[in-house]
Amino acid sequence: MDDYVLVMEDVEAGYEDHRVLKGVSLRVRRGERVVVMGPSGSGKSTLLKTAVLLVKPWKGRIVLDGVEVTARGVDIRKVRAKTGFVFQSYNLFPHMTVLDNIVLPQILVKKVRREEAVKRAHEVLREVGLEGVEHKYPLQLSGGQQQRVAIARALAMDPIIFFLDEPTSALDPELKEEVLNTLEKVAQEGIAMLIVTHELDFAEDVADRIIFMENGVVVEEGEPHKILYNPEKDRTKEFLRSIRRRRLKAEALHS
Image (cartoon, rainbow, N blue to C red; front, side):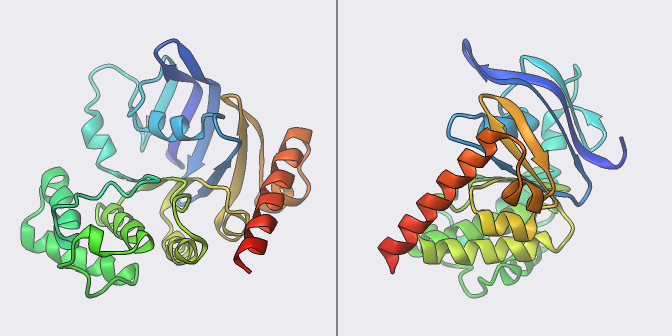
């Protein structure tokens, strides 16, 4: 179990009386990069949120960095502090500068001194290629820059695992590319990543494994080349065809 940063066993979860996850099991090794794909409504985002108990599971067992977070009495905030989460929307505080957006979580969650937090903020902004924007406000930045600030903020927490929920879905193609390039650099650092994305090239370049979900269950999983070019399940083949058709249409519109 020590080899795994995340273990989910037979997890069921949902909202009110709507069951979204229907017995999902998965494991993510330390440093492993896992991409989750699937049609809208398949449970991908709920999977990520359930892993850190942003959505409380109805059934099943979740172990995060060796701590069974579904056990009674666990301080989930302490465990969550070891993770980084990047959503589709950037979730930056608009009334705070970029620097303070990155500094404040470190002070509140990691309890570090401001000087140390500021130093780390400058390091991660340099890492994502955003030196010089420290004193700007989020709305003064492009969408791609805002998402890179969100990535920098998560990196500043020194996470053992990164959860990324379609981090480029709200961006146009050019801004999408700059965020994907940033994530490729982050992937080289050896941080475990669980990434929901439909970016096939990115998945092929970055992922160690791809999981395909539909209707709240894992339909198929395997190494990227196999899943992307030789999947076993008809539903996986159909989904990939639809993604490629959409991409061709989008490329034609922007050409």
